[in-house]
Image (cartoon, rainbow, N blue to C red):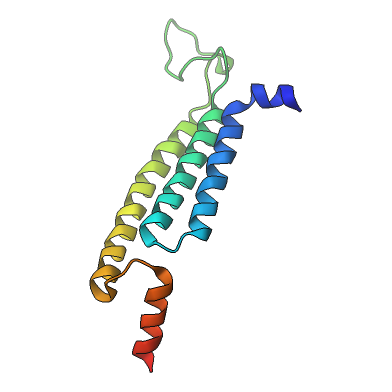
Length: 124
């Protein structure tokens, strides 16, 4: 077990980061802190995909020197997924932040419990 942890330290770090982000997302009441937790989780997933896509001794999938064997190159799919995920993550973060600003302007707080109480009071 211990030797596998040292070989797969990138995956272990990704799992630890994901756990930190998930606990932050579940335990914090402040909306900004929840957004930060979600971004930490995103980064952990990207790190995990990058670690799984890298193979020691192989090159980027750009044909040079006439080498066309697939065994000489890494798989480009995880890198493409990471790039796509980053673009989507930035868009989702921008949307979450804009909604958080709207909530703050309306309820004058970023505490999710206080916002819920104010919404219930408006409904009565």
